[in-house]
Image (tube, rainbow, N blue to C red; front, side, top):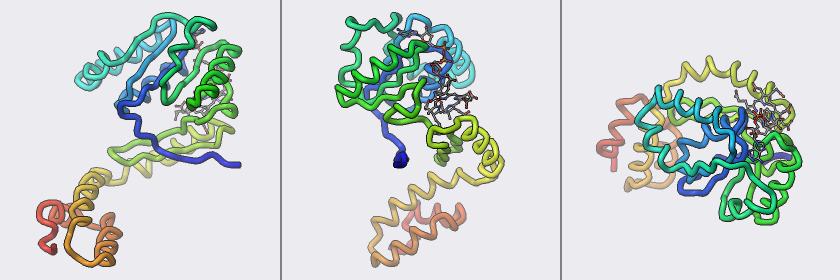
Length: 217
Ligand SMILES: C[C@@]1(CC(=O)O)c2cc3[nH]c(cc4nc(cc5[nH]c(cc(n2)[C@H]1CCC(=O)O)[C@@](C)(CC(=O)O)[C@@H]5CCC(=O)O)C(CC(=O)O)=C4CCC(=O)O)c(CCC(=O)O)c3CC(=O)O
Ligand SMILES: NC(=O)C1=CN([C@@H]2O[C@H](COP(=O)(O)OP(=O)(O)OC[C@H]3O[C@@H](n4cnc5c(N)ncnc54)[C@H](O)[C@@H]3O)[C@@H](O)[C@H]2O)C=CC1
């Protein structure tokens, strides 16, 4: 059996992170730019607050737009009392240091048909986070299928130099040219050839499609 790689569009989706220590904070920070409706839960929010203020000092506009929409629940999850918070979520990240509680929440999520990541038991999770290299719109996900996160991190470090040399500014330009080309009044096989050539076009050629369909349509 193998894991199935996908990239999720979480815009407007409800996502819950329970337990805000080192791992819960890392997972929360990774969710900030996804446009999801984020709820974070745990009495101890010190690490998260530190990470948020550090991010605020670097990218103030961005974080100020996001912060008011996060639902901060400043209590620990209590069995028999807090189950309602799980309802309606698309994803749950359970990252507490209490193994029995993590297991309980993962089982409840299963009953509700919600995908759950258990930070302490990768192999028992419905999904896991890969190590990620992100440059502009290029996303490279690396996973050891849960076997060794440290190995994923090492491979990421090995690939980072190659990725830093790529001209990723052109990706959005390719996207706009592609939309125009798809609407051009030419034969389907000509369209396909043009679309396949996008990564090899220079910026001027890409812009010519973006501006006026390359005067070919
Ligand atoms: C299954 C998975 C589920 C998930 O959390 O998504 C998982 C599970 C566990 N991680 C553990 C430990 C560590 N995790 C890291 C780091 C990262 N862990 C991440 C992902 C994943 N970790 C998923 C599999 C990914 C894959 O397929 O390779 C990364 C890539 C992404 C992210 O978290 O965002 C991020 C690197 C980000 C980056 O820098 O690129 C480090 C290293 C470090 O901190 O530097 C260590 C210590 C070294 C070691 O143990 O290897 C433990 C044992 C805890 C314990 O000992 O109690 C478990 C539990 C278990 O063993 O199942
Ligand atoms: N998936 C991964 O990448 C990694 C997973 N882990 C595992 O993840 C778990 C958490 O690790 P860390 O974040 O390093 O620990 P941590 O001790 O920094 O954080 C655990 C947090 O859970 C909170 N917590 C405890 N009971 C709670 C409850 N009932 N409700 C809400 N919050 C509660 C604690 O207050 C604390 O803030 C551990 O089981 C660890 O083995 C550890 C390292 C990496």
